[in-house]
Length: 301
Image 1 (cartoon, rainbow, N blue to C red):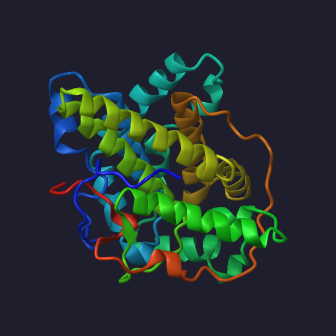
Image 2 (image 1 turned 120 degrees about the vertical axis):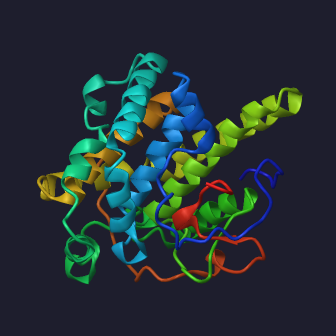
């Protein structure tokens, strides 16, 4: 686990109610884009937030957020193109075809016409009727007999959030291993790394190293081991649906992140084993600095 540190912003509650800015480019990155230097960090942050929004529960505003995003799809395509090339340049071992689906346009084109339609597809795919076929929880991809390892991983993930002064808001309780929470946390770490570039002294370099290390460890240990299985299975079973298309995007996003962070991709196919309902655990709640990890954004975004 990473020790507690002071590189994040102060403890604060980040409300998950607003929808208009959920996936918008941060202000600094927007300035970079206008000047022609749209940075890789800004692109990565934007795409991680977009990936999180794709799998957000429609009852939490997913359709509204994606509907707004659709009006800015060229910006997202630009970010995806930039990151795809950066990942290929950063790692000679990455297979270009694995990044082909890193394009938000096909996903947005399949966005259902209304919130109700998206909610119905979400329930068919991830709800009770689906009987745990595509769980969105990391620990469900560990063997069911590994009860201790599941509990330990849950605590470790929550510990990462706490190390960066974040808590899941009690007003919207969720397990820390939920896909959306994980992706939002990755985006938060990227934002923190990008923010260190405003520090010209040695402290900026040190904080940047901490952010980078946290990204590598979190993605390697808690994201990369299970997301390929979810993405492949979901894309195969529902190739023409919204979530099947979103799964292909998710798979390419993870491949690009693994290439960028120099993480060995996981090829083994894992079978999920749902052993308990996705209820909130004690590690997710309390603390004065509770934050809605479904909607982490820089203050003022």
